[in-house]
Image 1 (tube, rainbow, N blue to C red):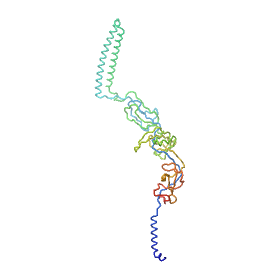
Image 2 (image 1 turned 90 degrees about the horizontal axis):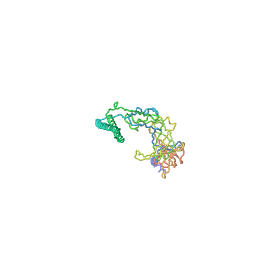
Image 3 (image 1 turned 60 degrees about the horizontal axis):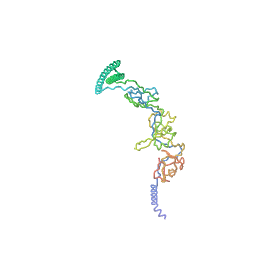
Image 4 (image 1 turned 60 degrees about the vertical axis):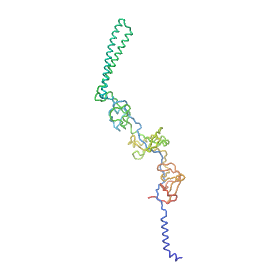
Amino acid sequence: MWNTIKKWRWAMVIAALMVAGLAWSFWPEPQSVDLDMVSEGPMSVGVTDDGVTRVNDLYTVTAPVTGYVTRIELEPSDPVVAGQTIIARMAAIPSQPLDQRSRSEIGSAIAASRAAESGAAASLRLAEAELGRGEELARRGFLSKAQLDAKRAAAAMQRADLARSRAETRRLQSLLSEPAAAGLPHGGAVVVRSPESGVVLRRLTESEGVAVQGTPLVEIGDPSRIEVAADLLSREAIRIKPGDAVEITRWGGEGSLPGRVRTVEPFGKLKVSALGIEEQRVNVIIDFAPDAARRIARLGHGYQVDATVILWRDPKALRVPVGALFRGDDGAWNVFVQDGDRARLHRVTIGHLNDEYGEVLSGLSAGMRVILNPPGAIEDGSRTRQRD
């Protein structure tokens, strides 16, 4: 026996080394994974959507009458004082030069009016002569009072016709006169003053010209008194109530700005998203917190921000990174916990969820290391190691 072993000892050593090498080559390597911690800390859940800043009281100054408005010299951001700052001056619409055809038509009308005036003058002379004879006959008793009154009325009517013909002739002649001062505005001026103190936000009409009544001229407001109008889906807005805390982010500065919901408008409006989906949207009006006044000084009217209305908040929530959570076959939440060099499957109960964390109600404790985005090859008991 010993001789046999001695004879084949090298062959047996080589075979043992080959078996060990094969075992080593096929032995499963620990899978590299990313790890994070279960921790206690602040956690909140909210509804986020785009918002737009706007001044609380926006005034659109319009033309009070139809007329000729002068050039508006005020620039955006120029200060205005209520009842003092002049926005614009308005005057009567200037006369327009006549073309040759219009002049010819008016000339013909003047000729006809003068002919009618001549006829009215002749009729008046005849009527006055008849009235004179009638008064003489009436003094002699040969003409009744009623007949005399009829002659007086006929003379008065002819006198009125002549006055009307002369007025029409003068009116037509005035149409042919050239506008005074090369067509500049004439007549009484109307001064348009600022209705409120603040600054000019937008100049809607700049150049001088004719403006009809109600034409917008400028927009005025106080940029230090601004609010946010967030456009939320109606199914999300129904969960929001006045007084809810708000965080204003992506406003262009560092950190977030605090705010409070003032009101949820009761009227929804249909909008079409960029993907062509019809959505019912509701405006949620948000006031900035008083301690944000200094920071919002750089914001103006119509600036885009992100508004997150806080629906739930816990300053010391037990939280697990949302990337570690996955659903099991039964629909329950699960995580893999790193136990030494092994992955252990834990079933957990999750409360609130946001983009970063899930609120742990049971199944985990603070300080546990969990595997983020576990690959499908990992099972309970699989060997794992933290990725470099």
